[in-house]
Length: 145
Image 1: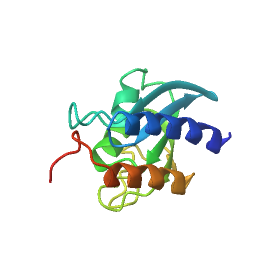
Image 2 (image 1 turned 120 degrees about the vertical axis):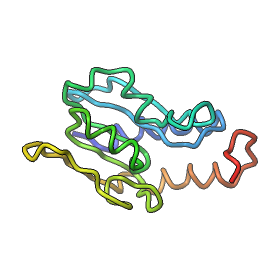
Image 3 (image 1 turned 90 degrees about the vertical axis):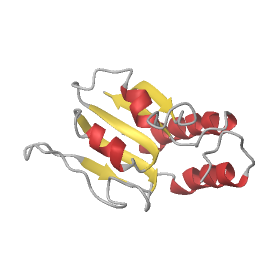
Image 4 (image 1 turned 90 degrees about the horizontal axis):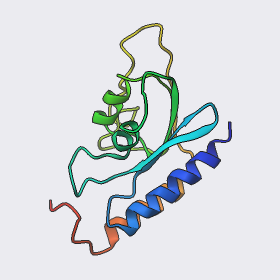
């Protein structure tokens, strides 16, 4: 499977998020080599509208799929993914603050028979660049700390 092909689609979605003043994290869900769902962060509308959850809301998660996401899933999203039939999680940038796929903790399937592949660093620099642009720009939708 061409990981860069699917990550490029995710990065295009992340650019849409950035253009809409959302945190530029996005994902695509792939089944049998075809994109079946896409999503990007809508966290200015709701703190739980992360890209992975937005995209998974549009598919039957009991049927196996692969997920490509521009940034390592956070602990919440990784935990949600473990309740699905995800086979592989491919991500761009690591998430050392909130990552649930190795950045902070590694959420693993409860079923010992279930194998989950995790692979990071796919087009990492491109994903980081979008995040830098978001945090360097003035943005009225950006969460106040």
